[in-house]
Length: 292
Image (cartoon, rainbow, N blue to C red; front, side):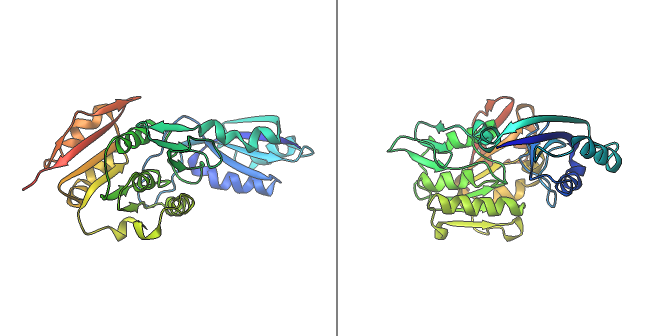
């Protein structure tokens, strides 16, 4: 079956209203895509995790009146729609497009992240993950650096905090690699749902994984704290993240740009940091907390 694809580039503030309008005009589905390759790693509390500008793709039946749709949008949103692209689309094109952004990846030589129906080596440690509501499939440099760190360490029996869990990829990976328990924390309700669903699909026992919002923070120190967020939150959360790491424990931070590393690390005087690992201008640092 073929569809009529109508693509619009719009500012984030109008995404919800435009999506509703497209459904009212007869769209069978509406999907969002980053319009400017702007990663959203850690929205501020209370914010919807969307990009500054987004491409909205709406699929209509072939008989849809495109001229009428454009006229209605021009009247309702005269200054919001930056561009309109109309094309025909076959089922096979759009139903599997997400796979282009979710290839099979191997980290540290032993951890595989793959779509749910992808083939992987029989003896692999594999995390099955399809793109969904929350950030994190292992493709972005910040997540990849953290996954490689996890896969190259022995974390058997460790207790772990995954702050800014997103899809739950880091916390679930830690459990699959031998961690005893993980506290996955995110302020986005979609991320909490995604983490729970992905953990269930990957067979992670509920007893080993706690999923919560930041107002339900852990009170005991842990062996490892992972924080794949941006430089601003890493700076403001320094007292909290420091408190969560036990003496001799590890803090792994990612999501900051290379030129932001020194300013962030200055807020963590209790740690001895290794040289940062940098990829695509993004940095990850590993610190060990001093033993008093």
